[in-house]
Amino acid sequence: MIETLHLMNGDLPIPAFLPDATLGVVRSVDSADLERCGTQAVVMNTFHLMQRPGSTTVQALGGLHRMSGWPHPIVTDSGGFQAYSLIRENPKNGSLNNQGIIFRPEGSDKKLHLTPEKTVQLQISYGADIVICLDDCTNADDPADVQQTSVSRTIAWAKRCKEEFEHQVEQKEFAGGQRPRLFAVVQGGAIKDLRKQCADALLEIGFDGYGYGGWPIDKQGNLLSDIVAYTREIIPAQYPMHALGIGHPPSIVECARMGYEIFDSAMPTRDARHGRLYGFNSDPAQLLALLDDWFGYVYVGDDKHIKNHHPVSPWCDCLCCSRYSLGYLHHLYKVNDSLYFRLATIHNLRFMAQLMDKLHQANVARQAI
Image (cartoon, rainbow, N blue to C red; front, top):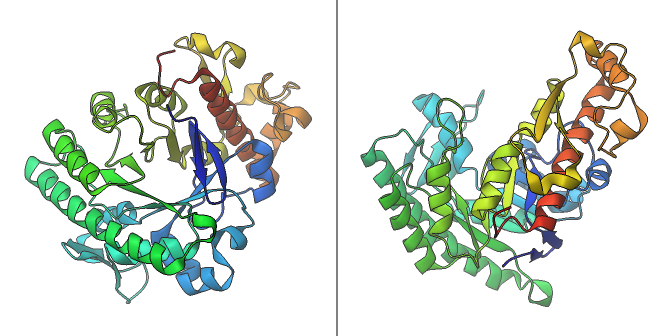
């Protein structure tokens, strides 16, 4: 049973939620804010960073940790999902083939080529603690032939990523024998046979951990619980598994019970900026009960909060709740002051850290609550 991942830039207790610091920053907060929230690690995005500020700039500024002032673990996404989404929305933006992904950044005439080798080289040069293989992402609703192509390509790309990763590790000679971890992504859509085919091939190649690949929710916004659970079942428990893109608190609890250990999403910080704050509906010390209504939203823009002198949550110890009233937060939101974005983001991230702490204590990553 895994309780902690020992990474180059610190230990990561799991389960862990990683805020999205896509461009090297979690919007509206700084690294000191993240530490005070109890955030243990962040995820950054290769696809975006290679464009802004650019890989040479990241390296000139000392890598992602020094550039962002974040001395703790960083996971870097391969960029495959973002490139895929860009191309899926408009095929004129680029194309996918067995060699990699060719895409044209918005507003640019320049074409960029993202190969399995290139994404590994970039992530290691950035100083990532966990490097994620390039994969061919699909939607669960895509037909079987598309899913089969995705699985075959994902396996081939993962093998190339592993070969390049080993080459880079040998060249870099990491101090003290430490090195980044390499995670592969299991694709296959909603077809269990293809998920198994992909997982078996990736396990044979051998990686430090694995991730759930593909869009994890259906058209109604519900978690694809059956296929998400199955994907965890076919990866042996000794390997950590990342529920890529899953960040809705009830979904995190559900996935933690399935055995997933790492989560990331832009949802908590995006919700904060848009006036949707998170809260426990009862004392989180009783989280083991996990009643159906344990989690709820506070819509800070509602007029009923105008004169509310209470904090957002009586069980939260964040800067926002310990110092400011919900009524004041409502005022900041209405006047669109930048302080609102910082305080609201701090609150939601502190909520996520409290949730992870409770899940860690309860050890729900390997046992039912």
